[in-house]
Image (cartoon, rainbow, N blue to C red):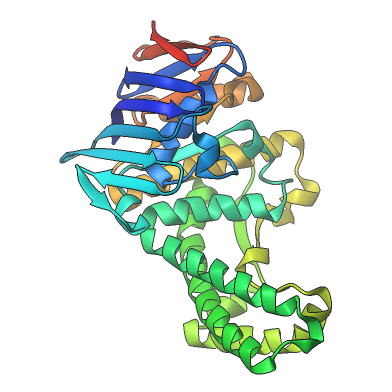
Length: 366
C-alpha cells in the first residue's frame, strides 16, 4: 500500500500543494519550522482521521482560512482508493471514492500509517498516556469499531466525573447507572486490548531479538486494576463484574477526589527487558532500541493482519538515531515500505526515491 498523490488546501502553513510521491522513499528536507512536519501530519490525518499532535481541527486551519481540505490517492494490491477530508470550521467532512461518510469506522482502515517522531524515542520513560496512545493508535487502524468503543467510554467517563464533582451530595442511583455503563464499556476495552497485546507481543519479541542481535528479550505487559494473568482468564461479563466491584470499593475516595480513579484511561503498558522493568533499568541505548522495536513491529503486524505494509512517517528521527540503529532501520525498510522522512540535513542516500525541499509552506520536488 502506498500514497500516490496528495492535495493540501489551507492546511497549517500550506495554502495549496499538490504532490506525487515515490512508492518507496520520499525525503522531505528544509530548515526547521518551514512545514515539513505539517506535511506528515496531513498524510497521517488521511489515515487516522485525526492529527498525531494534540489539539482540535480548528488549529489545523491556515491562518484566517475558513476551511481546510485534504485529498489522497492510495494504491493497494487490488484497487486505488481516493480519501478526502475537510473541515469547514464547524464539522468534519469525509469522502471515500467520492461517497460521503459519517462514521469513523467507514474512514479508518482505508490507508494505514505508522508514525515515528523523536518523542517516541521516550516511549519507555514517558508517561502512561503516551504508551496508551501508541496502543490505541494501532488498534483503531486494524479494528475501526474500537474507536467507537473508546469514544463512548470517554463520554460516559466525563458524565460520571461531572457527577463526582458534586461530592457526597451526588444522587447514588444516578451514579450507579453511569457506573453500569462505564463498566460494560471498560470490559470491552480490556478484552480488546488484552487480545491485541497477546498477538502483538510475539512481533515485538521477535523484532527486538533481531535488533539486539539475540542478546535481549523484550516483552510487554498490561497494567490495570487486576493482574494481567487474572484478567486474561476472564470473559467480558467477569471483567465487568470485577470492575463494578472495585468501583464500589473506591467510591468514597473518588467522591473526595471528585474524579474517576479507575479504568482504561489510567492503565499502562509495561515494557520488560530480560524480565526487568525497562522504565527503571534500561539504558539510553536500550530505550531507543525498544522504541525502534515497537515501531517496526507495528509495520510487521499491520502487514500480517491486512496483507499490505503501511506507510511509515519518520519525523526528524534520523538525527536522533546513531549510525548503527539508522542503518538497521533503513535495511529493514528497503524495498518493503513507502517511507516519508523529514530532515534538516540529507546525510543518507537511497537508490530509489524522491526528494522534496520545503520552505515557508512551499514544496519543490528536486
